Structures are given as structure tokens and as C-alpha cells.
Length: 301
Ligand code: CP
Ligand code: NVA
Image: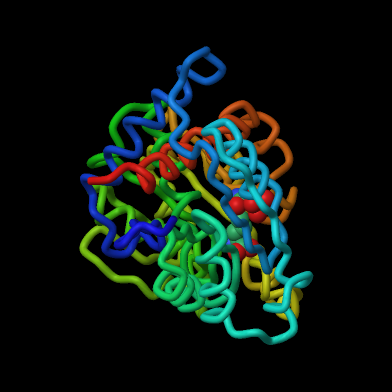
């Protein structure tokens, strides 16, 4: 059942921009055609494993539903319930699952574990969030911006808050790939460690937000960082996305948040509720974009 050389979707770092554009174009079709009769089922009779070591609502549900809509069957495996959680190496888990399922979607801590899984399983593998990237989310965010405001190329994006987290890093790679300007506003010690000519690093959130086309934030305490919660909440307090920050952005600036949102921490309740239509459209778009990723992975070049 294994493809000799499977495609993977592991990170935005180094990902082929043409493939990313193809995935985005087809995501529009998946969205527009959802529920119509006679759609192709590229995962027909396939089983795809979801191996999750961290909590998830959007990623898990959108992949489980998306796999079913493409004709396949999802198999959810909490890492805590399989031998992986008792210390079985990822490369052994990979070699077992690679003989039984057709693809894998992995949410875990180290990006290397997803890379190793892909290498040893020899089945298409998707990174569903690691400590250093969240590629499915960021591709969806580009899709959502363009759906609502047109091409992202040349636009100014402000990322306010924990620039060092997986979201900041994937955004930095996306800025290079899609040619937009990315302004990070983060406190000392939480700067994004990706540098390229599209990324700017400032302390003042208003400097980042000024004339921005998109204001973006993420949780202050990423999964795995819970022990640092108190220190982070103190450091990030001046970095809340709210109406005050919105006043310096472009008049039709979009506000997005990958969710889950912690109200009156990284985003004010008032701004989140005012922009809920866009933010929950963004969440829905996970389904359409990930169906397109699954389709791309299972379509030979
Ligand atoms: N944004 C996101 O990945 O949400 P979940 O953690 O709920 O999957
Ligand atoms: N940076 C967050 C993203 C959640 C979707 C985390 O890793 O917890």
C-alpha cells in the first residue's frame, strides 16, 4: 500500500511556494463544492492515523471530518493511549503504522519526531503542530486573508505577542514564501528566531500595528509552556490585541486569531466578539485547506 516516495507536509520552512499556491487554489474549490454530489474521493478506502500528544479541537475535528469527506477513515490515537506514551520510539511506531495505515497526521512537541515518523513510516505525513511550526494553521490564515482582503503579497502583517512560538515561526516562513511584510511585536526574550528580509522585530505593538492590513495574535502560553504561565502573563500584558491597537492599523484591517482564545489576555473580549465572524470563518477554513493538503499529498506529481 505504501507509495515508494510519499509526499509530506511537515513545515513551511523550505516548502515549495508553487505547491502552496496550488493547495490554496484547490482549497477554494473544496470550500465552494462542499456537499455537492459526485465529488472525487482521493482517500477512498484509506485509513489515516491522527497521533496527538497535545490537546486539539480545530485540528482534530477538521482533519477527521475532512478525511471522511474525501472518502477515507480517520483513526484517532492519543499518544497517551498507545505505547508511544510509554516510551516506544517514534521510529518504531512509524514502522508499525506505515504497514497498516495510508497516512499520518501528528501533533507533538519536537518537529524532529514528525520528520522521523515521515522518514521511517514511508507514508504521507502531516505536521499538525509542533513546538516549532504549525503549517496547516498558517496556510489557512493566508487563505483566509486572501478570501477576505485579496492577495497578501506586499501587505503588512502585524503579529503581536509570543513571536517565539510555533505560530510566529511558521508566519516568518510564510512571509518569505508569499512575499509580505511581517512585523513582530514581542517582549524581550520572546522574539522570533527566524530571520529573513520580510521580518521586522520591534518592541512597541503600535509600531507593528501601524498601517497593518492584518493584526494577528496567538495565546501567550503555548502547550508545553504551562509552567511559565505567570511570568508570561506579566511579560505579555502590554501586548494585548484590542481596539486601541486597531486604531493605528489600516481602516479595513483584518483581525485573526488561530484560537483557542483567552479573553482579555492576548485579545480583548470586545475585539474578539466584534471580529468573531472572521475569526470563526478562519477556524472553518482549516477544514477546506486541510482537505486540499490531503488531496495534494495523495495526488502524484
Ligand atoms: N488552532 C488550532 O490548531 O486549534 P486546536 O489546538 O484546537 O487544534
Ligand atoms: N502556539 C499555540 C498554538 C495553538 C493552536 C500552542 O502551541 O499552544
